[in-house]
Amino acid sequence: MKRAAFRLLAATLVLVVSLAGLTAANPVPATEKIDSSALREAMSTPRIRDHLVTLQDIARAGAGSRAVGTPGYQGSVDYVRDRLTAAGYRVTLQPFTVPYFDEAAPPALTRVRPTRRAYAPESEVRTMSFSGSGAVTAGVQPVDLTLPPGPDASSTSGCEQADFSRFSRGAVALLQRGGCPFAVKAANAQDAGASAVLIMNEGQPGRRDTIAGSLEQPGTTVPVLGLSYDAGAELAAAPDSPVRVVTRVVSEQRETVNVIADSAGGRADRVVVAGAHLDSVPEGPGINDDGSGVAVLLELADQLARGSVQPRNRIRFAFWGAEELGLLGSTHYVTTLAPEQVSDIAVYLNFDMVGSPNFARMVLDGDGSEPGGTAGPPGSGAVERMFTEHFATQGLPSEPAEFSGRSDYGPFVDAGVPAGGLFTGAEEVKTPEQANRYGGTAGQPLDPCYHQACDTLDNVSDTALEQFGDAAADVVLRMMLSPTSPRELR
Ligand SMILES: [Zn+2]
Image (cartoon, rainbow, N blue to C red; front, top):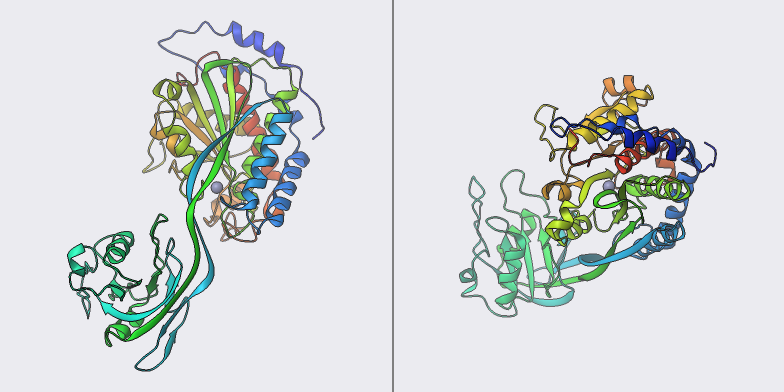
């Protein structure tokens, strides 16, 4: 589409004002009369793609990703902040800390005697996330193991401090999965003086392969390894045999930021927040997940700043950190708001993955109308309807997507803020019905590169970017011009 600022909206605002006399008992979404065509005309898919080119370059200049704690994330923050500042937004960086873990080398576990045996990384031994670093040689001491295992998960090895009452300080603790979190086992072992901790799988069918576990937070100073059941059982059969354990990791708290951009105009007690997450997973550059949502919002922010519209309700663009670590940035943001600041947020709109190459046209199911669905806070159904009606007016079919809380709208919903958003699909396989409706390939994932190194520029559909960019523009504009608070819309 052509590059053009939109100038027709001042006229539509008059129309909106004239529709404001609604009965409070039966509020009608007067926003349906707002014409977003000039803004949608101004939205440019090539410019959305240009943002993605930049994000991919930023990832490449880093270690190949834009994960929190990496140069790729910092580069993404700098880029988004600079663009929004240049467009005239008041940009703030909200700091918060996140647990950061990186494994610099595969673990080594070698039994030294009675016969030397090196256990194989991946198939027999793995470093637990948030293990400490270290290199130790000491005797193995089994702690409260149940060998062979009971028929049901029943081991509580290492869950109690008392399990270590006869433990020799400096020994390597051999523990078994079950009964409590790995972090509890590791902490008890470290407190008892273990120089390293080996946690074997429990041994029932389905609980025999190498444990890939996490201690959830930094703080453990000794190496902690997950073992297969067989590897653990072998070591348990020769107690006090010396083993060599080596891990090389980075495990620490790192500071990161959310990027928040506010426009000047519009009611501060009816803020429309539009968000996308700015981090990727460590495995790849995250160009669809969620470079696509970031790029759409940057283009929308730019076009709104160029246009002449006077918003009734304030717009705030939010670019979240650490979504991929469990919605940490959006959670931090919402939980640090005072109650009156929460009620000042009229609606939250989420754009996480809007360019999937084998896309489906999905709108978050805010009214919970799908089988087994849960509705969002009041107003969420109106958001869903606005997106759905936008697509329908373009002759584009769409479908509800599970309102699962699997992205940054979750913390807003938990705080009672009406929410909605768009989604083109992740690892889910396209059904034949979806292929009929949207084209693309049935039997293939909607995003075949979800959370992988191949989530690059080649993994994004321009058609999806254009259609979802227009839908974002339409609904954001309606919310900004709505004479009724989006919280009152039904
Ligand atoms: Zn995402």
